[in-house]
Length: 226
Ligand code: SAH
Image 1 (spheres, rainbow, N blue to C red):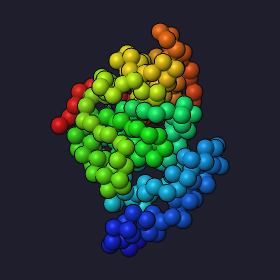
Image 2: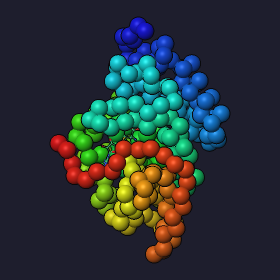
Image 3: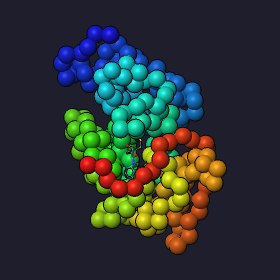
């Protein structure tokens, strides 16, 4: 693989990071059941390879999760597409993401919802994601270094809160920041440690919990690492 040397080349990608490779990823996603054309078109357009270290960039469009350092992972394309589809079903104005990580899911969401807020607890990841999102001019994405378990009270309520790390129980502080009728989408572990993608809808004081499919995420942890 020869390395691209200008910024436009870098953004567009070459070889294993080219438009053709991205189109193949999106065709695979459609084949796997992703139906929302908005999700497919944004994922076809955005440079997932920029969210990985150079040494891994050539694998960016494989259907796999990949390491982003500090023990964390960039979710596989299918998972990002599926969660984005679930978010868009709510036609939200304001969305909170917990677990910015590489910032790739953040970017995809920012292209599709008016206001995106995202929290990350690891400083190095937060900074890397922030500079990528600046480069890609995702001005409607607001990032903050913080323990996501406390949410973003000044910006609440949110029509959707999305977690990209697995919780052991429903995070109370986050439920309180949901708009009435809003949903939280999160990986939630059961008593056996199995993880389920879960959708929680707030209706007044009630919360309706719906278990979707089995998933695999890194754990939601407490505190901030500077
Ligand atoms: N959506 C990201 C997923 C990264 S993995 C991507 O595709 O790149 C999950 C991320 O959640 C990690 O970066 C981890 O540091 C972060 N995380 C875990 N617990 C957290 C918490 N309490 N608050 C904020 N971020 C958290």
